[in-house]
Image (cartoon, rainbow, N blue to C red):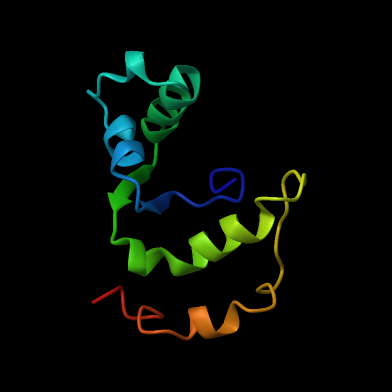
Length: 102
């Protein structure tokens, strides 16, 4: 989606060490459950742009965690949010908002 919107300097943050390691160019992902997905991610990261996967602390990923938990029991597909979900305002104004973490 970032590519399609014209963004060419992208940083994707994850609090999953396994996801971070699998995204690295020389990772041995052949034993992973989602090999095809990991290979596709590695290919996308090699496109003509500046794209990186960054490992962050779980506490700094509260907004993504909130979104994931809020849709876990719902069978919805792709959703583009135009404004934060109810309950996200406090998270977005928390200690990591606009500060790049601590």
